Length: 422
Image (cartoon, rainbow, N blue to C red):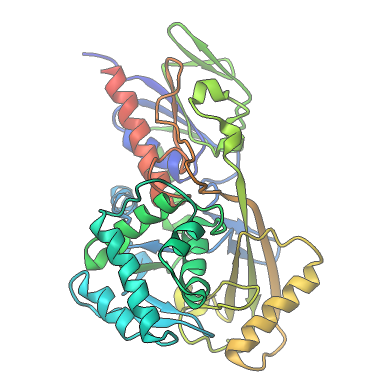
């Protein structure tokens, strides 16, 4: 009977966890995480006065691989995520809600009943989306989203009220740099799929409970060697395996962001220019109130303002009095007091006069995602060197920096390992 391969997975973010879970019963597995806890860029933070997430993530119904992974480690996605039909709620602009009709009638009905757009703009938006559907959610040549919008004659109101906040949410990349092909694929998997694929899935628990901690426990129960607070310093590839800080393994999966992977592998090993992956920031401001401001919905946006989206975490997660304000493509640089004042002004523009917050926590993720730029070359799961593999949202060829992209990449890396071993 052929022995199981000894595999090291470096990084316990969502990609590394996905790879490790897929390999749990097929390999002698070691999972190595530099941080004190798993989760990578989607986890709970422990601060002196409170616990909070290191950002606010939105999932959609099309994240089938993520939900399958959750179920494999013993979770029920529908219990941990609030499922809502696709809706768009900009407090100072466009708003619509899609009824529970079969696709694509749900989107048609939602957009035709939208508030904040003239009829000609509704029809223009429908024509643009219909053209993508007819082209199977592909564009002839990748270019920037802004150039595509100009070609499709999308009005300033459509760009400002729909396309810009949607692209910032999905790609965390400015329209002038964002890949239209990547956006088309995201749209195809959401509004181009079944009606349920476009549903919004909002976390009702903190991000660590949503997958990382249960997956870590699952792996330990399966006999995996799970190591935290251990940073890998070097890889040395040999004729019959790879040394991870001097420890021999048959295979290694590097499940790190590109800027961290670059410390262990070269661009030649990765098969793409690692320096081409530029980090994009996200700032999240958590506000705690004695009396919760009355947001119109659990997720409410602003067309004009510093903040792009507000989340009512009391209604979502049961965090009493808590509001999260998300600013995409923003490192929150400058005087923190000025940033908080802008956030409070934006919230007051929606909810009216506010009581002074009891608590304010600013989370700046300067490397929250990679920029989903035009014609960005992605690597495959196999390195250009024997016994080495890659995983991470940046490795998935279709998606921007999303949890689903990370999960899919981890599964692909695990599949490649076992295919090559067998």
